[in-house]
Image 1 (cartoon, rainbow, N blue to C red):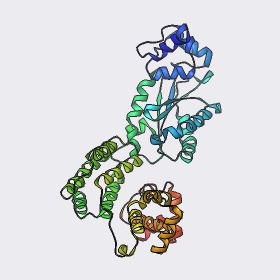
Image 2 (tube, one colour; image 1 turned 120 degrees about the horizontal axis):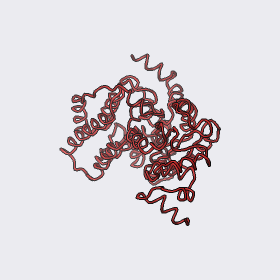
Image 3 (cartoon, rainbow, N blue to C red; image 1 turned 180 degrees about the vertical axis):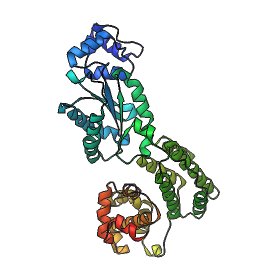
Image 4 (tube, rainbow, N blue to C red; image 1 turned 30 degrees about the vertical axis):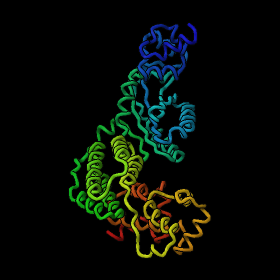
Length: 411
């Protein structure tokens, strides 16, 4: 069989491997596992014998799937993550075959045993603990983008298609687990959730804040909503349904006084919320929602004494300080150099750009510590800090105590 014929046998979903000759033509661990996951391989005794002799395993053996979803950072991160996971498989305790899925923005690492241990039917609890305790922390240190990791096992690797489908279906449960936690399907099944009661009173408050065009009060309503979501385990579906309903209430109030510039952008932001599998994704979608409504950035007393450039800069800082906006981004928005903007900002406001952003963040952190039960990593997400430990250091430098100590003083 020629190479083109072999390629056709592997790629055509209507074809299956029905002979050892076809298997010999395209046989490699990657092709075996990819064909298995795609449902393009029909395992048979001859195939098991060939793979067992050549690689020390067969699809009759037990195995596990470690799925890494990288979201928007997939293209920039996938090769580095792939190389790291492949190096893990060289440790000798188990083997790893990494398969990219560009359409899904994820990598699937097949974890399997070879040699004498491959036929052992015991669970992969030991391998799971290695991934949870060693591999996950390493990934979190090196991947700055979204990161969702899921684990599933199969008594026979030929069952991988069903396992993969099930794991992809539970990705949104990342909203319930701690950030960066390795999620197992059985952990999701055992999780006891609490029904979410829709916050009608909070909806009334957000409507009133929208009518008054008070963006800060609108944000406070949403922070209280996030706090409600995270106080107790809720189903991802309930969380997103509640948030969408809340947005529709805000949108309805907005339309009584303003014309929405882009209904399409509102629709896209709503769809992104419905599809979100991470809080970062929800946060990004919410910013698009607010931008579509185009709330006027509020002014404060004294803004009238500023030049038009710095007045706009100050208003943008108030709008985006909790998203980690930088001087470079601000200068780009205002079409001036960083050096000029920095000098003028300090000259007219009396404080540097970074100092102003930091002060606003600290005030927001204080408010969240005092008025919510959000955890530090959740507060960090809401105030533009990628690392909660760094946020705590900054907070202590500014306030003189750690966030946990501050929370005790206000409760």
